[in-house]
Length: 276
Image (cartoon, rainbow, N blue to C red; front, side):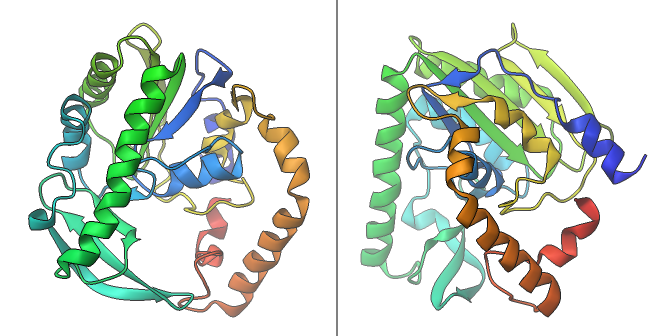
């Protein structure tokens, strides 16, 4: 089956119980989730896992503990290290940092060497504020959807554990979890835990990280969602036509230049053209 056929199949793999939520919150996995939420008008504020990366199951297994301990052991100074040399993006130094205790990687959070305790404390304080915001926001909300996207498949019982822990942490809030798994052996979809857990697997190995054109069909299920009290994604998109054409230009430049670092905005789109 070709990539386009698989894409058409994937369009409606996830069907949530509601069309409107107080918050749709990323649990990380890759930058994909926050990027998709932002460009669809569903990301209203920052939360601790927005720009985190998972390369194995360790962070997935840690998430239930995170909910039960208010992110205890998360990104502590003695547990972090730079797993590869720093990179410069648009003149800004970005350090690739991994948390040994949880397995989470941070590719946008840290700019100073992690050995600099004062600088690390400042960055960690940002994460602390986002953790507090997560607990305060979800606790007073009626309906919240968490979204987790990984570039690897894992046993569905791990997603069930995450949902259970989130429900324990926020007993007065209606919680749903959408778990998206890429690089799976086959495509599938399932609603579990009384319809509160939505699991979808995709064979496609790579998903465009910054899909500014909203062309990745696996994420089209989000088009039906909205944030309570805010304009729908379609209305927002009409207001962002200038931004849309700006990204079209960047994508064209990325394909034309085929540069190793044509810029974070286009993320070397030419490499992913066969998946669109």
